[in-house]
Image (cartoon, rainbow, N blue to C red; front, side, top):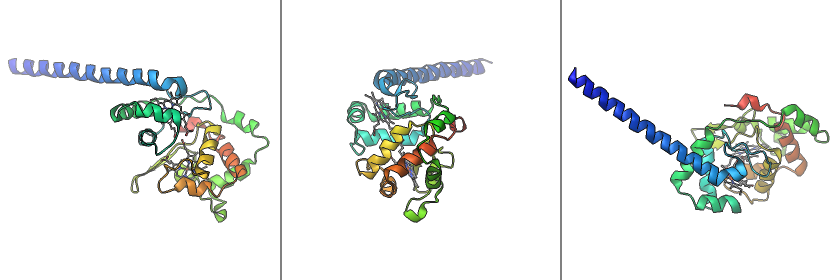
Length: 221
Ligand code: HEC
Ligand code: HEC
């Protein structure tokens, strides 16, 4: 009786300590997210301005890789380099976990985007995305980024394919053009650079317009 009471007390003390520790670290990473990231990406990673990518609910391994790449100047961006260099690897790991757990809030319904894309050839975009332009050297985006743009992981080879659905279209177009100009080169072994080099502006704009028709409800966590 005495022994089990002691055991129980020890158990409860442990629970209280464990709970307050996890609670403290969650509030610290939240404070960091608000003070360091919210101005551009918003506190929950759902950026409403297409200048800044949505980072809510992206794969944690992908997020951490990008943050490390910025910190090590492997991926170049003035703002992101300054911010990541001022934070520790521990902070970046906590932040990548925090943002990977945030729910996606979609601001634009896919149908609206569809209507906006009148002068864009969506069937060309679909052909590119699904691999019908392989004879021009453009492999199916779907084979890595998933048939709904949900992204994925190749555990065997250790590659991470980011989610494309619910990303701002103009941000994604900018990234493809950066890959093509070899100004973004953190896609070892040049996976995206090789693909982007095979695409002209019309290809890039059409494929991203096609991706913008994907339903973000389907990739929501
Ligand atoms: C001053 C604005 C600004 C702030 C503050 C900022 N970012 Fe960024 N972030 C950007 C911009 C701009 C890009 C896109 C860079 C590019 O075009 O390649 C970006 C890109 C990213 C990416 C890459 C997304 C992707 O899909 O590849 C991640 C991850 C990211 N930021 C996380 C963070 C985190 C975490 C913080 C806080 C520690 C933060 N950012 C603070 C402006 C900002
Ligand atoms: C062989 C696999 C593969 C194929 C095929 C592929 N991608 Fe990628 N893509 C990647 C990887 C890996 C990354 C992330 C690189 C990194 O670590 O930063 C990426 C990144 C991107 C990004 C930047 C995402 C962000 O959040 O910054 C865009 C946009 C993109 N791909 C679009 C496409 C399109 C459009 C196609 C088809 C024309 C395509 N990809 C085909 C592997 C692939």
